[in-house]
Length: 348
Image: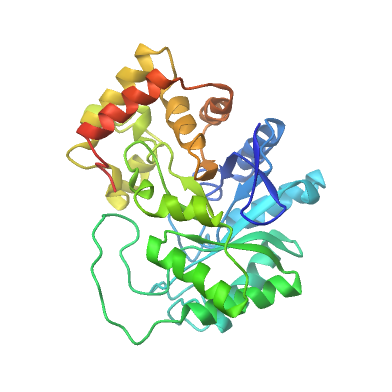
């Protein structure tokens, strides 16, 4: 397993990160324990959770994923060998996240509440990487390339959010901070504000990145490289669609689309299936597993720190973990890029 530093910090994380959002919904505690055991044995030291998890979010299950992680850590006694990433929800009208039912925001009061609850759920004194799950300002962050400007005086200033996070870093409750589902502008505003006000600098951005959505490469990848703020690439298999299991109208039992329907339409666009079929052809031509090829493509990008994988079944997880063992030669990369030219970011 390859290990990389989280931005300017001295924290080293595995280039494969274990995603956990199915635990407490699609996976029970025993299954989650098996996944953590396997990933840890493969050298994965990086687990990603969120106060939102499991997915889909609900008042009844909120925080269960983190509680499962805490029980596994207490059983293994290995907290000092793990890097735990957590996330606070951004602006939303999910009124069950806060005790008083208010709209979730990234202000000092709510960050304090969310962080203390996460520390309790994870049963830990500190969180290695604390991320903003999505911005406070009005923004379409979960699909589409277009920016639709909305004037709003009711936005928590980045300075307030960053100042609060810096306080918690100084207190030792947080080791490092990062963003998620953020734009190039937002990322650079956090970097610029930190420099101007001598506050904590972000170390990472957790955004979608996969063969169907390479939009991160446009603009924000340069920020990642020049500012040492690496991408934590989520959905490297495009919510499982790159495996081909949903092609031609298939809807296998137990899959997210079967269970939760079109809550996740991002990877069901007119050009997604033609592109997926082309990538499967490339994998077959070079005797590669298409899932491993897709994950490895993300892992080798110079702006990527770690690739977040997830699975509901153990054979899926093992297959995905083995992606770090393969190599993609220049001919494979060229073939992938040729498909990208024809079907450019079909699922942004």
